[in-house]
Length: 233
Image (cartoon, rainbow, N blue to C red; front, top):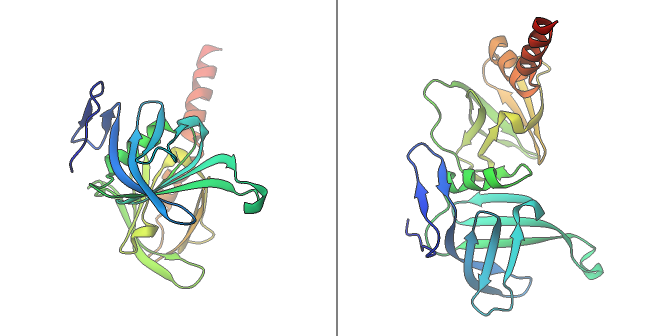
């Protein structure tokens, strides 16, 4: 990938999957209702900025003002704001759709955004699963049909990997709101943005479900705090 450097900033991609950066940018196309424009999309320390070549459609968004960010693919980024469109648009929130013209978005860029945002984002770019993770063959239910793949249960993440790329997900366990398993062959994962329902091809091990339950509902932290309180009495 080729990066364009801004003079006062340094971009450093580490091999551990973490982005240590203050800025990076891509040449992009911004689609309008009618037509489109081109420019640069710059992700900085405090905001995302779009510099349109024509100057008319340039905008910037502080991370706290972004309602939802979706790294839809390595070449597409969708940004939803808290601003509402005019009444002619039925007061829908403004959404900006960018297509990357040069280079590709990576899981490292995705994690950069996740660290900056104050709200959970949709993360579809999947890295290789941790070798020590628990793998579960599953089917993700759609409104019509579904797609097959595998769930990878890691220490702090739950990853769904499938050939249906738009359904790939990387969830931090702390960002999952609820999970449910009415029986060993079904699992529901609910986040702030969406709910995924899985059909498991083999029974869900109780230890794996208990691990997820404790992590997601932060029971381990609660027990540690309770033990500490008892120790100080």
